[in-house]
Image 1 (cartoon, rainbow, N blue to C red):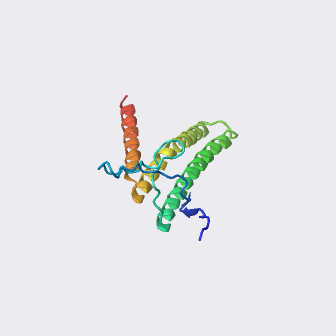
Image 2 (image 1 turned 60 degrees about the horizontal axis):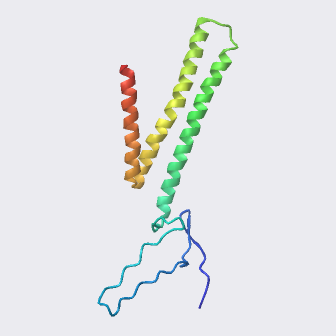
Image 3 (image 1 turned 30 degrees about the vertical axis):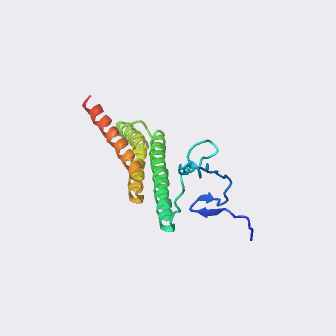
Length: 159
């Protein structure tokens, strides 16, 4: 019974179970040598192919939840910064007094701070979600970047 294998989807990565490459093993039956193991499968580019582990529905749901948190965070930070900046522009239409100048300055500094802090908080959320998913290597990268950023800010404050 011959049927064409349809692609199977695991998570969001389509996997095709057709064997398109055949590897011939050299035969050494009479020389006393053992057969050589087949080389690892190669992709079209020549890089080794790493077998994909099928994602469980719970793992996919956690990954999607983390991505939603990050997108909400980035949208919220941008909208907060934009709102503060627009409020400072609206205050430009008021009569020019000392208190209006102070309010404009505070709003613009707040908008700039929100715009700068948003990617840092995104890195914290991404590192946390990566750690929860068990991807420790990337969670450590995120922690390392945060540590270097804290070191740079700390050194800049003393200058």
